[in-house]
Image 1 (spheres, rainbow, N blue to C red):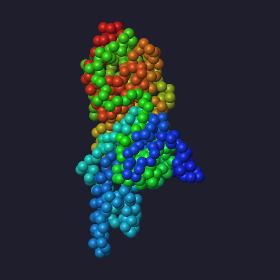
Image 2: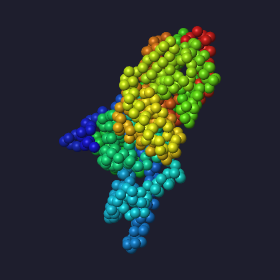
Image 3: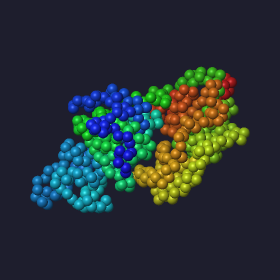
Image 4: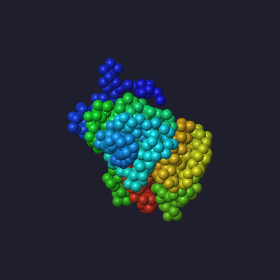
Length: 564
């Protein structure tokens, strides 16, 4: 791992050691007093000030610090009591309030064992990571703590901080890169238990420390690796940390702004160790995201069927062009891709609509696959998120840059099919311009293994990137391409990018947000389903059945009013 100075422009004055100006230096709030840590409302951060945000897990995203602390106390009290009984020394129990934050919080597990025991004058052998939990080595004790932690996690589950989860989703909706950084080898398991496995663009955890030879916090390696994978300069990134070692790592990495989250009444210590500002919760920050689209909480988005008269009035002598996602929009989400069959009723409605306006299905599936499933000759089919298009009267368009990736995509699919074969329920769906890895039927304890396999492949094939869907990892060409760009390209290719056309886009997934955003000023985005997120869509429909009702009503309007 290169030294921080070779990875980013320094943010410290070379003579004084003070923080030199960086993109938002003039927007830092004045330091809060030692007893007050939430006074950051005047920070005035704008979306253009930074390109990525990197979050610690425990204490920032999830409420697992309590579980960790309890597991450490159980381990060390057992060990120290046994040691005292053998040697006759006085038993002094582990102090969660004093010992956890000082010696353990934010550090890799084995380093934490070593750090705490050293504070008690105990220096056991390091041992081997394969040491059993009853062995009196750093590794053995660390493995026992991990067993206690996983037992508690599986029994009690894990809660998340809603304010942090909401911020991450807002950032992703604005196409700002997000990463999770954790010293814990259980980070991906924790996200899975919390229902947040698809929340971040990048995840770096304790397993990566060992696999990539990285140093744990307070070294900046984890944060620098996250910035590298997000393809951003560290000084254009925000770091959110609640641990002393974490803010030290963020500062050592030269990151633009290190934000301390004070969960342990240690605001002064966080500032002293590198935090530029300290808040008691992410909700205390005022980050003004200049949105590409005005995202709103789901409960604030009106229902399309209830507001149909308003939608109808926007047609007013304009032609309609309707773009539809397939899975979760025209059909319900199912266990296996091949089971998503279009109902005869929905097929009839869509076929009727094609008589009055241009209708295209924009899907992540292969174009030939979705064309076979729908089976309507008068439709335009845009497969692989718009890379491959076919339609009536011999229409055929293929994205040339995407086509250049066909070979690497095929190799990736073959390798994943081989490597994931031992994992029950893992399904690899090869596509012409991508590979989907479905884990809906994989046991929760093995989802981590599925993602690790995908990530390992990506290290060997940097031409591809990983995106997320509903219980699916998708590998796509590393191009600046998404459904929003696909819809704009389709409008141009079909001669529909003009004032006399009102485009509609209906979709249910995170990937559809890009399409909602680009249509904010020129069309109508309609979100299908009730996901727990903000959306740039203008209207919402609760389920695929409501999509059928809406499209049927739209067809009637076009038929009677002559629009289309």
